[in-house]
Length: 69
Image (cartoon, rainbow, N blue to C red):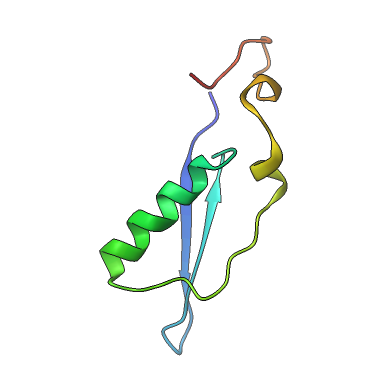
């Protein structure tokens, strides 16, 4: 099963960079929204990764079974 993660990095100036991992399609935007609420912050820049363009039928584990529901 593919793990869904939110990787967060804070630099020395307090800037926050977050990246969703294992979250495909527009579902990643839900995580960004929650993070903004938790931090009382607003995104100033965002970029979509290759995971964004994957759909659920393309997400298959080693046994050929879909991991998304």
